[in-house]
Length: 433
Image (cartoon, rainbow, N blue to C red; front, side, top):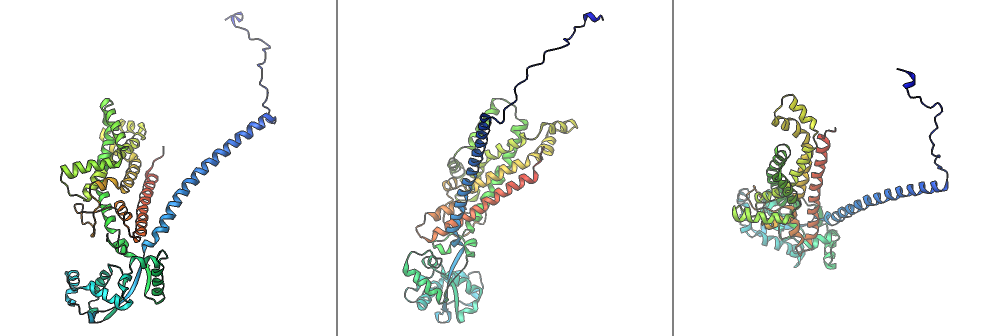
C-alpha cells in the first residue's frame, strides 16, 4: 500500500486543556468540607438517638414488669399451730393414704379446723391473717404425714393477700402493716419462693393462683397451631414458587395471601367461632379449636416467608441439579428446600411468637373460662397465658396486680426464647453465597 494513502497524524498535536487543580485549602472548599462532616455527625447522632430511644423503651418495660411482678414469685407464709388431736377429725390414716383423701378431709370439716386454729393462735381477727386456701396446705401436709392426726403441729400456710402485700412492702393499710411487722418479729411470718405460682392453676384468691394451667394450655394450643400451619404453609409456598403457572389466578392468590397476613386477628376469631364451633360443633374453649384458629392466622405469614426463602435460592442450584438428571421433585426436596429451610423456620417461629401473644381470637372462641385444673389433652377446656393475664388484670383485688405482672414476665421469657431460637436457626443453617 502506498504511503500517500495512509493518513498522516499531526506531528505537533495540540495538548487538551487541563482542569485547574482543586483548591482544597481555599475558604470555600474548607467550608463545604466542614458542612459535609457536620451532616455526617448529625446523621450518626440521630441514628444513635433512635437506637438509644428504642432500647430505653424496652428497658422501661422490662424494669417496670420486674419491679411490679417480682413479688408474684414470692410467697408470704404464716406458721399456724394446729392441735389435730383436739380437733378430732373423723379421718383415719388409711383414708389419707387412699385416693379419696381430699374428699374425706373436706367432708370432715378441715376448713373449719384451720379457721378455729387461726382464731386460737392470733385472736378474733386471725382468720383474716391466713389465705382462704390455707386449708389446702394443711390438707397436703396431712396427706404426706398422716401421723399428725394424733398430735399437734405447726404448719406453714399462705398468708392472706393484705398481709402478704404488707410483708413485701406494698401494703396500703397501716394497721395491716403493723400486724405484718409484729408477726415477722415473732418469727411467725416468713417469705420464700412461690413454687405454687409455677405449678398451680387459676383460683379466686390471689395467694393461691398459678400459671401452670394457662401455660400448659398455651403449649397445647401452640402444638396444634404448628402441626396444622407449618406443613400447609410450606407446601403452599413450594407450589406457588416452583410449580404454579404465572397467570391471573396465581396473581389473585398471591394478593389474597398478602391481604390475609394483614387482617386483624379478631377477624380470625370470628371465623373460628362461626366455622369450628357453630358449624363443626367442636368443643368450646379447647386447645384444638384455639390452635386451628391461630393456624389460620399465621399460615399467610409462613407462606410469605417460605416463598421469599425459596426465591432466595440461586437458580444455578436448580439448573445444576436438573443438568445431572434430577427430577423436579428431587430438585425441590433435595436441594432447594434444605437451603431455604433457615428462612422458613425463622418465619414460622416469628409467626408462632405472634400467635403465642394473641388474646382477641381466643376470647371469641371461649378460651376465657375459669380453669382450676390443667388440661389433660387438646379436647379439654383450657385457657392460655395472654387470656389469663387479661382475666387477672380485670380483678379488683390488689393481690392480682403482682400476679398479672409475674405472668407477663413468664410470657415475655417465652417470647424472647422463641425469637432467640429463630436467630440461632438462621445463623446455624444459613448458607452464604
